[in-house]
Each structure stands twice: as C-alpha cells, then as structure tokens.
Length: 86
Image (cartoon, rainbow, N blue to C red; front, side):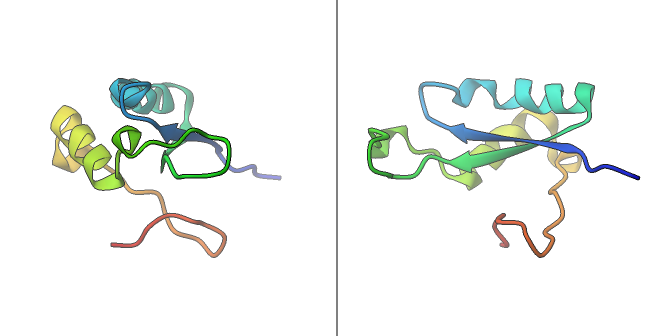
C-alpha cells in the first residue's frame, strides 16, 4: 500500500528560527519531506509578540531570494489541507 510523504510543520518566529528557512527546505529535499511553514499566531500561553510574527509572503520572499523564483513549488491543496490560497 503506498504511503504519503512526511510533512514537517514549522512555526516561524522572527529572531528565533527565521534564519533556518532555507536549511529546512534543503532538509526536505534531502530526506523527501514536505516542509510546511506556519505563521506564529497568538494563542493563550505562547507569549505572542507582534515583532516575532513573520507572514507567509515575507517567508516566501526570503526563500525566493535564496533559491530563485522557478525553484519554489507550492504543495497541493487537497480537501483536508489548511494552506493559503492567493
């Protein structure tokens, strides 16, 4: 029976792990993982501060700058996905 790929969800926090975006993408390439970047959102107990927030457009711009426009591939949006549609 075929199995799906492993998805790694990563909450991006400015000043904490935002410098690791490209490295995570490379890890995904090397290990055949789907890396999904998630915006840091305010929830009870997570010490959210707006200056720690990095929106998906900024993440995409950083990755595009590093890899180039034609190297960025958006994952498909199936019926149970929660990704954004632009």
